[in-house]
Image (tube, rainbow, N blue to C red; front, side, top):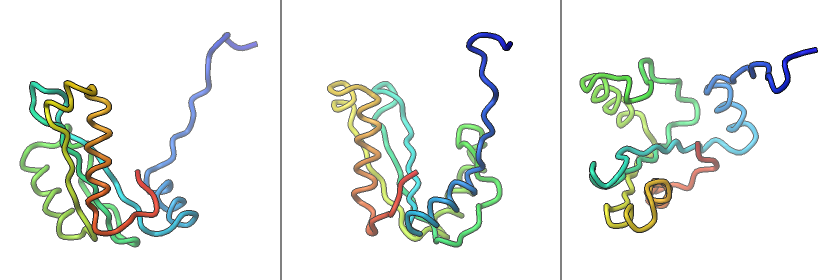
Amino acid sequence: MGVTGARRPHPRKRWSTIERDLRASMGPMLAGVDEVGRGPLAGPVVACAVIMPPNERAIPGIDDSKKLSPAMRLRMALKIRERAVAISLGAASVREIDRINIYQASALAMRRSLERLPLTPDHVL
């Protein structure tokens, strides 16, 4: 008998595996979207959507931007811009954050960034 409520660790799929599976089943055009700015004290919340070429290999050094130095973030941003098929930004204002809350404002900024892409992705991560 095991411990009640205990779970076995679930093996995590690598992002490259998830991406490959999505491209195979849903189409080659995947967009990645993420946001920065968490609350009206920091200003608006801004999101960026990026579509990379279907066969693009992962860019070495890409990681959570909060774990990267400012200089490394800049280098990674330049590499992404050089290789991306499409990039767009969306934002939600401080007033919108106050009115609908930070979580809804983050989703709004992400949706706006996706709507501004010049291409329609098959799937969004």
